[in-house]
Image 1: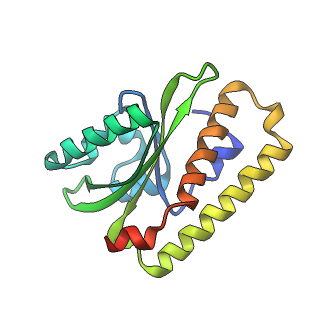
Image 2: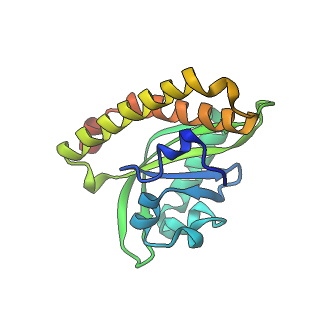
Image 3: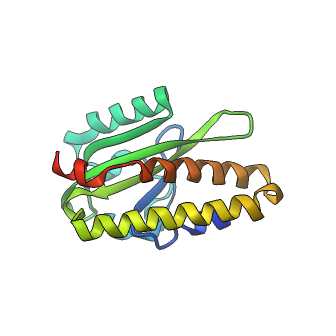
Length: 177
């Protein structure tokens, strides 16, 4: 998949990010997601999201997908995730929809946080990253957006929505629930 300037913001980001299509198959992910789950990126792409959750979390993941289909987003969804070695971790899932130029749903940008990793220091790092990413996206909007093809504009719009959602997320409160 082509790397747009907007997508480069995610490359080595401190967040686990993945893009899934409208039926829950992983189309792309960043290195942070791959490292946390414990697979090579090539082993992740093309696989269903259910492969990264234990069986007892399939219902919760299915409900998350259902909510996403119905509302276009998922926020503050707690789901257990499974690494390749079988270890599990409590995750916090946030997702926003990605649409084509006709307004048809083509997938989602999904961010997953390991709740165990959400120390005050880590949350401060993430909040700074969200603000820096939003600033970079704002620069792209001013200088490059009008020159982008339709796919790249869709990519940009989806990532903008995702970072807007993340900036509005109170990770400290969610961690403590």
